[in-house]
Length: 639
Image (cartoon, rainbow, N blue to C red):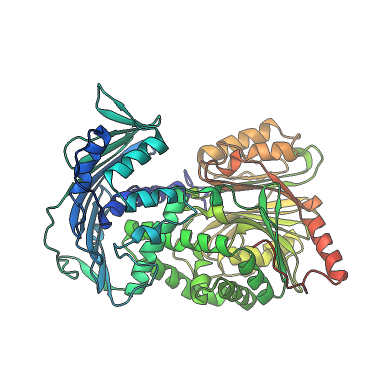
């Protein structure tokens, strides 16, 4: 979760990240091709004058009741103005076996599955991952009943699954008319599905869907080639994987990606019912999820998992499986191994109290402890804008600290967005604007009026130090002044390249920070800098490229007038990017923060802010604790 103020754009919008987003979209666009090919389709021959049924029948009859058949597909679409063409060739050999080949200008993927083995080949990288043996009962890629395992009730396409699994032409024709208002244009022989989709049957056994700049063409055939051996990959370097892990990774990646691509009401309109467990409470404030956790690290970790089980698992699936699969396709390196390698170098720098909390969280989620610990260092592997204004720059002299997190909304982290109010025994209480399943911090403010926000840079692979999110959390729970924070950063071994804005509402001071493993630079308010431009009085402003220019122009144009409303205006587009995941405006002197999170339709800058009063919540919890309530209660509600 990093951005480099010295770079023309932040890392999530670099060519690498654009390729990752493209890989995700490619995989999802092909899902329904795969679904149609792996299912034993049925179509009973019968005379029917209905032209829609007549068009659908040859496509379905090519695989009518057959255990094996072939489906070729072509997907043509645009991403960011660039046209992409994906070719797919999928052969179903039976209930346990299929071959899938996907080709794209930048990527090539082949998946070969047999009853006793699975191979995942990346020809452009010269490698093939393969495994033999048992697979997970649910997270497996066997063609039989695959939609029941890959499509969850949390997607808007779940109601369509029965139509695919019972794919008879009469049923599909009825559904297309009832659900999409299918109407035929006699002149063009096209069927209109709603206002945006056109369906045609260019030849017997073929079907084409066109929507705007995107099109999907499918052609079914009963001409099935003989299956190749699962381990026959001439010219590719074999890498052995546990088959259980391989199929679980790909299955969960597709399942979560479908939820992100086509979210259902459970995700777009989540329940706002409060929940309460021992040492934890979940409430909603102005439409934002707020989790209040208190106690020992073990108690806090357990409460985190109990309160946010579904959100935490969705977050882990987004990071490890959906994003991880796309990243593997892009790089050729098995993402879980890369993540574990990073964790093995970082874990010695993580406080034991944080490890205890993470392991308790994993147990509450009924997940592998080491896996959850490794996922928590994810921000170290991928690298928004920030400012602090006070004194003469603001209307009332108060310090206003803004933090813009531009990160890939495409991987669905918004489903897990949570502001945590955390009070660990014998530590400073704090607010952490984060995501279920992550205990580290990228944006936060503590009860001592100290606030922090990070912006990532380069240097991936420099992992012999304290993880950034761990260092941020340590500052919140250990540092009572800005000087304490500065000392912590000076004295700690650091990873990669990061930029920060640190602020202290008590003293109305702020500082910008450029931190590398081997050096650290502090940029004072009003200080000119070759990378940031001329200094602005009583202001620290960090961003990059055109967004830096826009942010500086806004600050100088309204200098002396800034308050909460104008502070939020500073973080609107284009200072915030289309990938804007969350925005926060801290008013540390008042113990108040304003939080905006992206949803599936809009980025954070286009969403309303929730006013969260950290001081009031902590006082409320202290009152409850002193009266004998709160921590001792084991009641769970709202599940």
